[in-house]
Image 1 (tube, one colour):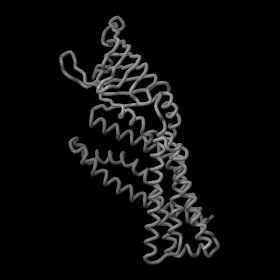
Image 2 (cartoon, rainbow, N blue to C red; image 1 turned 45 degrees about the horizontal axis):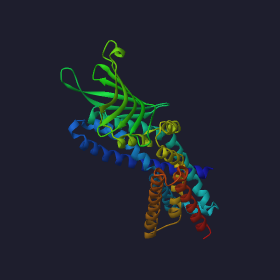
Image 3 (cartoon, rainbow, N blue to C red; image 1 turned 45 degrees about the vertical axis):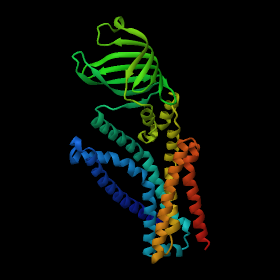
Image 4 (cartoon, helix red, strand yellow; image 1 turned 90 degrees about the vertical axis):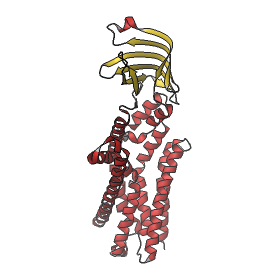
Length: 373
């Protein structure tokens, strides 16, 4: 146990050092990009730094498996360079037992990342998107799924009684939506004028998203600014309400599972399906997040196949490059499985668990073959 704890500490130290290096590189690159992107907004260096910190968490979280394979390669190279690996093997400890300590440490790091870092990524991504939306459009769109309804928010250009155009907001509630996100059923549109609160309420049996406008049918409208809105209410067979929403924008808002903490994903998936939308992407993402600790263990096993040996000279460089290349290959294989799962080509469980399981089995098979000589 003392030896296993020593190897695990070495691995965690390597992982932390590599994580700090990658985090610093991502921050420096992103802060330059934020300054360039929002040069017209005069956000300043501090504003760009805040946006960068919010933005890089998702990128950092996504490349954690690659940092794991680099930490594994650095660990085994360090043990080999100091001849500690030779001494460990000479004591009768097998290669699989040497691998067990960093693999378990990688699993624990993966579990901690899923439990803590995943919700942090969801929160920071949402704050970054909100900040960008405020700077770019002064309001943007917000789309969410409640327990029994679909909620949307959009900006609306309004003309006041004095002829001055102002930017208002429309909050939309619907009992459900069509799978292609172009039709809302039992929809309520509440129009908020800037600085004066709600000004109109529109109920429609059906709201179909057209080219730049909602096409409403079986409509009843209340002017909320009047003393008695019900007495001034009017009905119409059809009505048109301008919008800058598109079906693709609505689907993309629902189709970003990374913006939802993993603890809320099961409930969100149920609400999404109840509202009539497809939750395939969210199911795939949920399974991939559950499999992330196993993926990080597979990365350590891949590093062990190429670096857990006594190496000198040019052979060491080639093996290190091959190990990192296999890690990148597994990373892209996982992304390919995610795409196939999102498109319905693979079941969510298979898309999430197959790449790390297959990679781990292949790595263990190669280690057993090396053990047999």
